[in-house]
Image 1 (tube, rainbow, N blue to C red):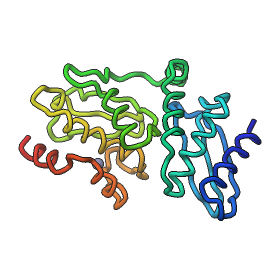
Image 2: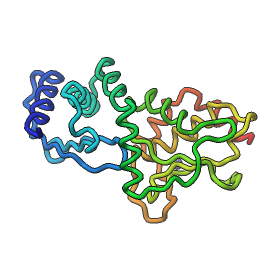
Image 3: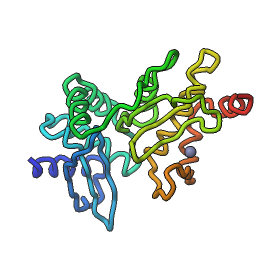
Image 4: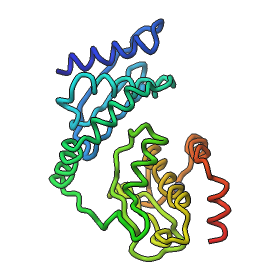
Length: 228
Ligand SMILES: [Zn+2]
């Protein structure tokens, strides 16, 4: 099994960079609580971690995830067919249920519902995930804060792998793009983890800020939040 996966990654490497030598590749399956896949380059070796939820996935799907991860690594365009095939597989009923069961077995409780009166944080997350992250971010817990906090608009809590959004935003007076921005910002924290000392340190690296500027209504949101 893992030999075949290695072959798939090597073939993908050759397709993406026909002239470059294929680096040493290590592929491992990890028991991520969510459907999470990562790739890193360390001392010339490509380290790939795939969620164990993909163990037993069809070869075409493994090929797609190999392509997506390698294309991201080498900053090549991601083929739309691969991206669609991977998303289809992940969102297929079975896998979502499996992820949910695994989450339950691993003892993660749902703190509160992601569904507010007006906005559904899970729907917003999934939409942003496919628009900005090729569907690659594993969904954390998403909850509205219990209090209508104004000092904290939202935060990512790595200890509980949860994005919490202030309930102030669950209102018809708040435009959807403002909620999207809060979630997008916290998704960037998910994507760019910080070595934390205090639990709520909020560090925005240059790369974080560059990606944040990809949010289409950034200026409108900032103006809106100032008035809030
Ligand atoms: Zn932040």
